[in-house]
Length: 554
Ligand SMILES: [Zn+2]
Image (cartoon, rainbow, N blue to C red; front, side, top):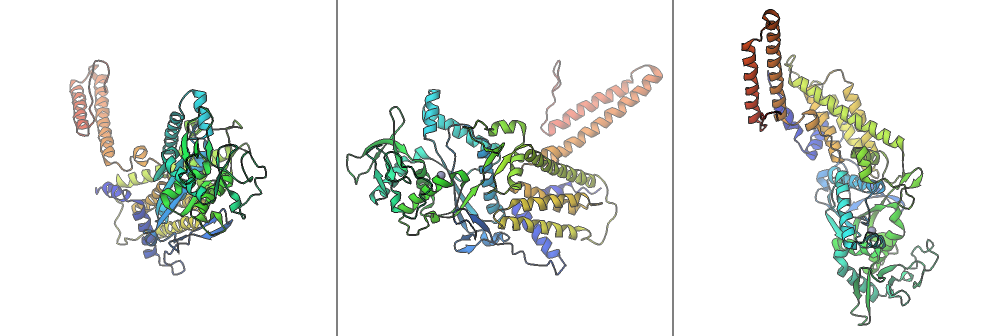
């Protein structure tokens, strides 16, 4: 019998881009229907910019991004900043949704659009809440922040969220923040408040700035829209010293940075005076992102009246609600990521995030979980089916050989091609990943319902679905669950099956003998012991050592 298992492993070892390229180009090459014969030109990427409230064509280096043409985009650098957590407690499902949605967005831009993405995230590691927690636990603010920063990274890893290229801890950049505020103060965009000893942002410099959201003026501020750039510390709080050489020696303020300016400094420090995308949860839109933008606008003396124009595209993800209320610590309805993952696989959250558009709010309930669990089962079932079909083909002789080498492959390639296009259309339309998911589910259903599957059909469709799940961060462990990619496991399993059969036959022969003579057949016994020695020798060759001890075999 001709063994095609090695061929199977070679196919499945291909990386994503090659596979999509392979699937797409094969499809187009083989598609003979002139109605559907078209160049794989893909679609122009468009996103809803939260501040302009419009769906805009994304321009990188002045040109639009063609979602279906990875080669054209591969040289284009995209700068993305995302607001990170304040590390004073374990992250909850609200955080999980924000960062999984961000991860899906970045994965789509990297893997499907082919853009060169650089991501940076701040970590707010000094803040009122961190200080309160440290006081409560009789620890230093630094140790509290270290602990929860580490826990945050563990949670993100457990959710298979791709790490940012750069994590920027605020306390590592205090000098940068002081210099930044110095410049704002020297340009007339910041002032010292004698009442509070804070340095505040002077919002009156921006008459077009949205001021209606804040009407009450707090102590030490000249306008309700002003905000603290540097907050004077209270007794026993950790502090750094703010000085401004141009103002003079009297300007020494023990304190810490305000939250909004932190992100301005860190994003500017990494990316310079502009970025392509700014991402964050919608609850950060006002005042955080407005104020962060105002600082950048002032610092770079940008003339544009659109103070949010410092970032080309602002993307805000919807919020998570629980029993129709925002999930928040103050309401006591928090589910931490750790608690969730004790009961559910991280796939469930990823499916929820793909199924529901990133701008939508989500009400976390049983229906949402059940639907995602059902989709997760469909993928598991599909890979199980695929493995079974391929194993059956691998372990049986070919029924017949045909001169027609293309046989049933072409229709399948057409469906794969259409699925790929639907994935791209969805991404192009403000990162609508559910369109791709629906198309993939449809392809799986259609394929499994076919009466017969050729080896090539199985490889093409299997590879395509596997790559799609991999791109969007799923880990369907086909290799360990289904013995799909590890030829060594196949050999070991086959060897054990042979051993079992040998022992079974010898035992049956011995039983027959005992019926006749009431004696154990010494020849059978010898052969069983010999088979046991043999399998121990064989296993040693595969790196598995079977040792006999007095009571246990291991
Ligand atoms: Zn921020």
